[in-house]
Amino acid sequence: MARGTVVVGVDPSLGVLAAVSWAAAEAARRGARLHLVEVRPTGGGTTDAHRSAPLRRARAVAAAVAPGNPVSAESIAGAIGPVLRARARDADLLVIGSRRHTDPSTVPDGTTPLLLAGAVCPTVVVPSRWAGSWASTPSARPIVVGLAGTPQDPGVQTLAGQVVRRLGVELVSVWPRRRRSRDREDGDADLTGALLDVGRWAQLIVVSPSPVVHLDRLLRRSPCAVMLPPSVVARPPSTTNGGSAVASTRGAWLSPEGYEHAVAELDRLLLTHRSSPRRLDDEGPDGLALREWRERRIRDLQELLLAGDAGRAPEDDGVAEPGMVLTVRLDDDPEPEVFLLAHGGPLVSAALDVYSPDSPIGRALLGARPGDVRTATVPSGAEVRLTVLSATPLDRYAPEATAPRRGHSPVSS
Image (tube, rainbow, N blue to C red; front, side, top):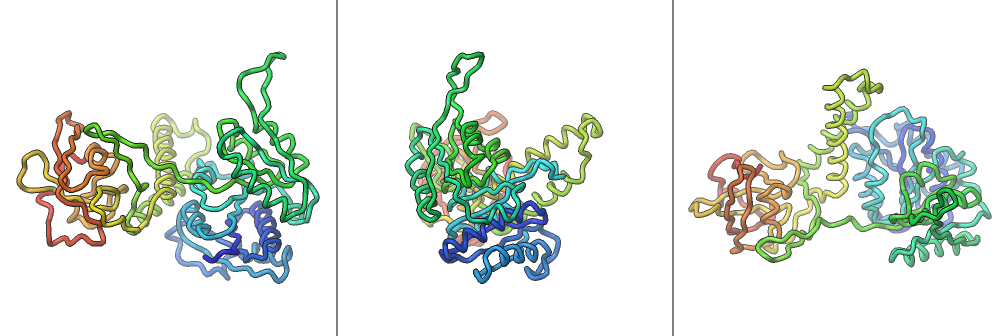
């Protein structure tokens, strides 16, 4: 997607129209195109963007706020976070609406924090309770920047300064304040409370997540829109094997088939979660345990899809990492094992085993090169020695060259 684009997420709720209004006005100020993205569950068939009721409403609001400004729209099946993140990869700005307290869904909505954790452009969260006219009407209210005394402060100040220059309004800086209990100062600083107080007479808060910013509380209660700078997805921590520090250079990797499988599973779980009883005492002990498992699995899948690198092959550099087919000798066995290092499970054909990078074998092999010898302790308690013979990207692997000797090995668990 070309530069000069403001992307806004659209859903069936009426509250999201405040985000559309804000995004339309901002796109017009920037001279940018507004791109509406509706993300719908997979398995519901294809939907033309012109037939989508939420997109029709959003188009009408955008046309009323910024007549003549270019608007495009698309309706995509998939998971909300990964789709919006992909569409905003080359955009100037991503705009989303915050969840209302009255929203009927009880699904643990991890989309917003996970999306913000991997944002590649500035992201604005617009309160859903805002009226469309308030969200889009030019305002003389100041821009508030939250400074937490962290290395991120200069970037936040630069971002806020760009907004101030574009709008021609005042900039107000807010620092953490000390919380007091019984007239005695506590050691904990609170920037969130200060931002909520000052934000009552501001039009935008610019802040970066930090230990003194309770982001969930700020986004739920903010009286105005909140802008957050781009973030960098955290890489997996380094692991030590044989005295050498090995850092994984890539996040979770999924083949196209694995991505589709994960999206479909997430959609099924979300649908089940929405239709399950809302009163916890209606479910019983077994139902509560199942509900807790389902919530954990939903969060795991959301994190996997947001951090996943679907279908993109790793470099052919011989380094063991997600997306590589490894040929490994276990102990002194003359016949090697061949498997794909990847998350998810059913990512490729049954002819090729899949080991997770989080499994004992996967953790031991991350960062290894041909000729390296690693050791791993399998669930049975036994210690196995692993000699790496080759590491090949999946798209360059020739199955007939080295076929796996046996089915799924017990050491991969």
